Structures are given as C-alpha cells and as structure tokens.
Image (cartoon, rainbow, N blue to C red; front, side, top):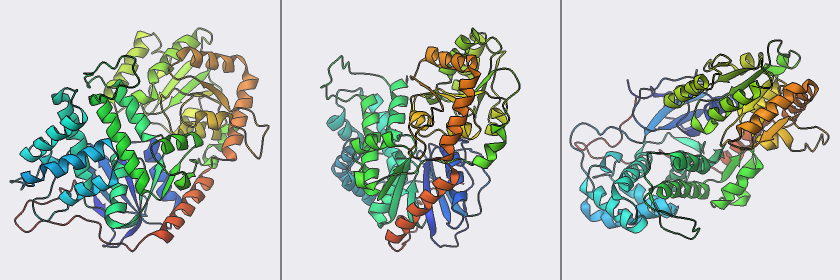
Length: 525
C-alpha cells in the first residue's frame, strides 16, 4: 500500500468545506493536524472533505479516527510515480509560453500566470503532468529558460533540482482532481494555498485561508538552515545585491505562492495580531484579515488546576521532535538549570517519527551532556498525563503560530516559559480588556537562549508563590479568550459568511484525455 487509503462517501454530492492541508493530517500527530481534527468535530452540522498535500508516495498510516462528518479524503502527491506505459507529452512549441508562466508564478506571485499553467494541465490532448517536469525535452527547455531569466548566477545543477521540485509540485496540484465543495479552506499558503487559489480562479469557488504560523517564515528558517543547498553567491554585507542564488529562489517561490493565495482568498484568518503585519507585507488585503484564536477544552484540564504535582521539580516540553521546535536549546537549559535545582526532572513529550535523525540527535545530546538520567522521551502522550507530573511547561521554538501546548498548560493552571515566537507573548503577557489587572502567565525569553530559559526555570522553582500566581493567571487568560467554544463560534460565522457568497458548485476536475491516452491523474490509495 502507498499513501493513505482514500475514501469517498459523498455519493457525488458537494461537501460544505474542503480542507486543504499540507504535510499533516491525518498521518502526522499534533500541531495543525490536531486543529484540523478539532475543527471538523466543532462543526458537526457541516460536511467536510480533506485534500492532503504530501511530498511523495507512502506508505503513511492514519493517526486519527475520522469524524462522522468527514465524507471524503484524498491525497495530492507532489512527486508521484509516472504511470505505466508511454505518457504523451505537451508540444515543444509551447516552451516560450511556459517559461514566461513559470517565471511569473515562481518569482512574481502572478495569479494570471497560474491560470496559464492550468491551461496546460487541463488540456484534453497531451496535458502537462508532474512526471514530465524532470523527464521531457519540453520541460528541460523550460528549466533552462527560467534559469537564464531568474538565477543565471547560480549553479545550474542545483537550480535544476530546485526547479524540478517546485515546478513538479505546482503541476501536481494544478492537475489533481478537486473534491466538489462549496468552500475551499486552506490551512496554510504553500502548495495547499495554491489548491485553494486554483479552486477560486479556475472554478469561481469561495476560498478562505487560516494561517497558524506564517508558512513563508517557517520555510525561510528551514531553507536558511538547509545544508543540502549550495550557496554560489557571496552577498557580503550589501543589502542591495539583487542576484538570486538557489536558496533565495526557494524562498522567493514560497513567497510568490503566498501572494497568489492571499489574492484569491476572500477571508484570511490567523491566530494573533502580529501575523497580520507579515501577511500584509506579502500582499494580503487588510479588509480581508480576521483573527480567530485557537481554543482549548477547559473541562478536560480543570481537574489538574487543583492538583499540583507531588513529585520532584519537573519541566515539560510538549511538541514534535523537529528542528523548528529547537529541542536542543531546551536540553541545554536543563543542563544549566540542574545546577541550581539538583532534583530537576525533564520530559520531552511528542512524536519522534517526523524527523527521526533529529530525534536521535536530541537523545545523543542528552547522553553527551549527562542528563539522560533525568530527561525522558516518552513519545506522544496525552497532555493531561504529562501535566499531572509537571510544574512548568517550556517551549523553545524558533517559529510558532499559537501553540496548543501553551493553551493546554494554561487550562491546567501550569505557568509557561516560552521563546518570543508566534503568539506566545500575546498569550502570556498582553492585558485583557475585561480583566486589566491579570498578571503574566509565565516568562518570555529570546530565541536560541538556553541561559535565559534556564534562568526562568530556576526563578520559578525558587519562588513557588510566583509560580502558582502565574499558573492561575494563565488559566484566567485562557478562560477569557482561548476556549474551544469561542473558536468554534468564530469558524461557524466564517463558514456562514463564505457560504452566503459561494457560487453554485460545479464538478471541480480537470478535463480527461481521450480513450487510449495515458490517464491524467494517478490517484494514491
């Protein structure tokens, strides 16, 4: 078996909402996946389809029990295996048109250029497919043309692999079958956002976007840290150097995708105010922006509020073991804090299978720094089980949206130490209009600062009354702005508004080839 088993219980009818996700639900636990699962369950009167954008063929295992109102699930594979038999390729005479279109989509965020690529993927005869990108003379000519116009100073071989990934993924999402839906709701920009933009531009459907973290920022961090990208241009200290190497080409492409998505979406929601500044910088219209903070089920954690842990002083990081969570800074902080809090225990609770190399690196660091006897890596566990043993919840992420672990910690009455990422400062420190005297719910420190994390942990363990006061404050903050009921009401209103403005639903699928031609869409199952 490859991929996630697809299913369709729609009986040919349109669903209310097609959620378009990238690299998460249903095969990745936590984070945006948890939000997707919660969102469907919070809207029991709406029907949903999931269109999951994944990098390559599986296998992948579903990690969630599907809610009753999820009627269809499909995958779009960005790098699918070519079909058996000979694939009929587009005509070589189309190279100039495609060069211009790909340049405009990948470097200028031009939605009209996206439409031109769609024309090639929708043809009845010789349609463009993702496996053509790296294996046809036409797309070789297109790659060479884009290289000459966009990145002529970069090494061509490095550029070609980047182009193949970006252009191949672009063609994959533009040639895939779209479930029939009244609303298309993207959970990020990137390729998922382009699916929503296509639904809007090609079929006139209503589409909305919810950004948790800003996708372009997260990709920028990953690309900046990527050792597999070769830097061929020495930019020095000049801010005005407009040459583009492969690293910048990757970043510019994701920013271009975001511009196309922002232009197409009628409503753009995010979780906290600072994100809106970044969205506007990439072209999001201010009048389309909305805030809908994530929420947490208070009742689930209420029993923990009156039950402080009885064991040794314990700190917990609840999150995936991936570089963007910067588990290494947490471990270094534990090394430092242990000097002042000798009985300190630490828990790193979260899935370890998303980046197994990084997870192994973290365990190796704990052994090397002599704290493997006090740090446990239990994998994915329930937050309430972790918090039952926890005095302080720590988050050391490089980038965040509105972290669920901080909301859950507050619901349990546990104070937090977090980096100044995403909505952390807003949750922990910003004044509440209804309760202006509520104090901070924890301590915010700089990114990549294990000394500051350690100092904050030590300070809270040395002052139990302050720790208790901050835990109570954070619980109050969650009660007044971050409950599941409040978030569900926000999305219910958003869907109602989008439904009122949606057009009649037409079958959202590419045209098929004539009998005898290669099948246009390889469905993963």
